[in-house]
Amino acid sequence: MASLTAHSHPRAGDTVHLLGTLITFKATAAETEGLFSLVETSTAPGQGTPPHLQRDDAEAFYVLEGEYEFILGEQKSLRGPGSFVFVPRGTPHGFRNGGEAPARMLIINLPGGLHENFFAEAGEPVADASVFPPMTPPDIPRIVSAGARYGIEMLPPRS
Image (cartoon, rainbow, N blue to C red; front, side):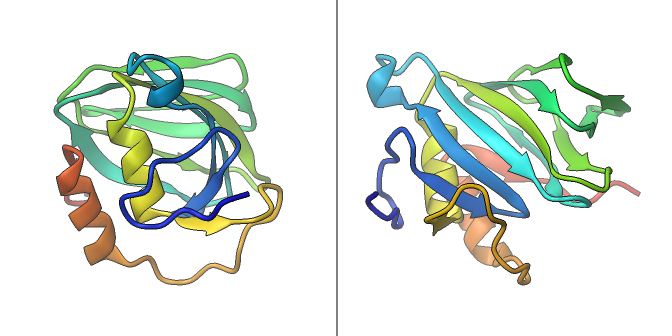
């Protein structure tokens, strides 16, 4: 499997680690005529994404296993297997695995390309999609910078 580096385009099957989440590319913009990207994620307990928004792509989540706490605008909700959450463009959102075991979900981004390239640039390549790497402090400047390139704005934490 080829490793991912800054500004590389991911391939289906590649996996990166970002903010306690393993992200495996299932369908990329190159494979979907740019219409969407699809990733499968596994999020470690207590981990997830900080509040953020994207102006140029919509996002949808389908929970496969475990339970996620979603923030959507000003609302918080717990969602388990079979739950679907749609996030329109420009809507502040985030998620966190509040459970004691890894949680899994599918994420669809419409159109494809922006989010998958952000994941590839901000994340760290991993060889084994079933093993979480040791937790280290995230490189916030790198994440914020990559986000800015792909229309993803990190927001201050909610109080």
